[in-house]
Amino acid sequence: MSHSQTFLFGIYPYIALTVFLLGSLIRFDREQYTWKSDSSQLLKRGQLRLGSNLFHVGVLFLFFGHFFGMLTPHFVYEPFMSAGAKQVLAMVSGGTAGALAFAGITLLLHRRLTEPRIRATSKFSDILVLWLLWLQLLLGLATIPLS
Image 1 (cartoon, rainbow, N blue to C red):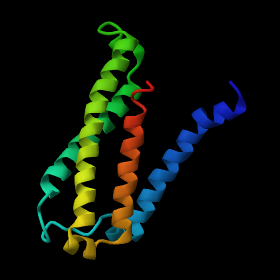
Image 2: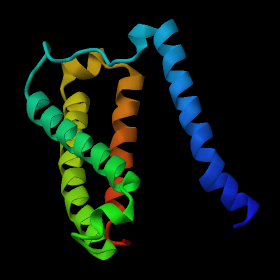
Image 3: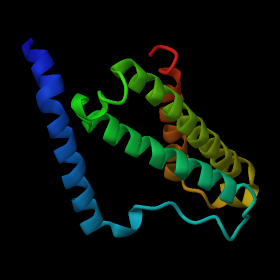
Image 4: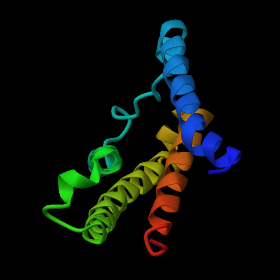
């Protein structure tokens, strides 16, 4: 393995995880109230419940699917399925969960951009985070046909 591959796949993930954890702890300690977007539930409930439920169910499934999929050794699932079958299962279940999360974030983004009262009370960072999540889910779903 080359030095760049060793760094990118052997060292950099630990650096990124350390920065994420330490940065999160420091931000929580110093600026606790910057972790959330302002609630818009009281302004209009419209698409909030459906969009929020779809997004959160999809993202939780994706998180735990990636977590267990990446950390499960081959010998654990080999008696039950081949590596190819595991890949197909991951693509189908992950694609379904990704589609749910994408539909949910699209509803939430649409609600925040088109409802005048919600748009007026939204901060730039609220909208930016929704766009970034929307783009992240779109890019993740776009990789499925390439798998």
